[in-house]
Length: 376
Length: 106
Image (tube, rainbow over all chains, first blue to last red; front, side, top):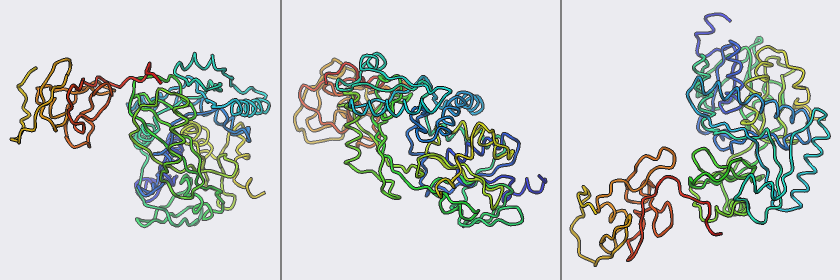
């Protein structure tokens, strides 16, 4: 790369559109390879799934319809500890990663049976083994003494965990910038023009050029991908979250619906709604979330709720990520998923390596993640 | 209980008094005032400690916004003292760190 390109703030070797967890993890990984990366963030008008998510580093059940995604989730989970340690060492931010295993609590026998069946199916698809255990009521009570009296059992994922997603985002930004990465609040990128092997990005605040382009704009990828010869089959799926006051530690492990943060806050969630681009909340869904939480942990009955919000997952038709390089415009990459926390370590690692070097680790089976699977 | 409070009541029409127990000591409060006001009058400087660092805190906004005045009132933890009116026989304690949830009857 020429020196003149390096000093020009409107040009970069690699541009990443999207300053959320996905964009920043990929950007950090590429920057660590020594390439100059600029992240173009839409600003506070963005939907920002990274600021509304639940904070699970979760493996169990992910990719039940795509073994390559299950393997990627596991790989990311294995890489997470090293990434967290590096981030903490260099930024001083404790992102509160805990990977001691996670629990999926089932409310009825039927729910438990279906879950066991699903995980057994996954195990059958993974000759290398797929780690999970079924916990009966007694075993669950040993892990979680405060579990409710009606709960029949749960499944245990030894590779599951949780993290503070807001500290994670902050640490990624800080580390990325410390390594020389640039973060530009550009407003929405409205146009991408492939030009002489480069890409020119247009937003209300300026024109930016780059040699390599990564689309990590979440739901915004739908409009951006066709500008570089790809289709992003993404749509919003709303999740609502309830936050309770800080209470004394009672929960040692995260669950799919309730977790207790390092500070003692109780977070409840995991609703799924198809309501378009409405990121608000609704009383009926929040009541369902609260009911489930109280059924799981009756001691939460009198605990005060202090906040709630809605956020939009970036969903694809099969629920799995898209990783793809444009055939028409090589050098343009599409990266999109709904598990930006779990996959952060994979994105900063092998996915960033693929984009930086053009060589994909065959074990990633990237061809399985190509977005053209939805056009067959 | 100490009375060297920097918190001063403005002149008012007496509306009667109520007795309440604050940190194990009976105090006299003016009917109609908030628990936070009554407690500040006693000279207590620290009405709670925070859940994470356990630093001391005291009522601040006195209008229900800042949540600095959380106390244990009649056994209910994390109650906003500035939004709770004094009542005869009320039992008020400093909120120490996070509230407990374990062992409660359900």
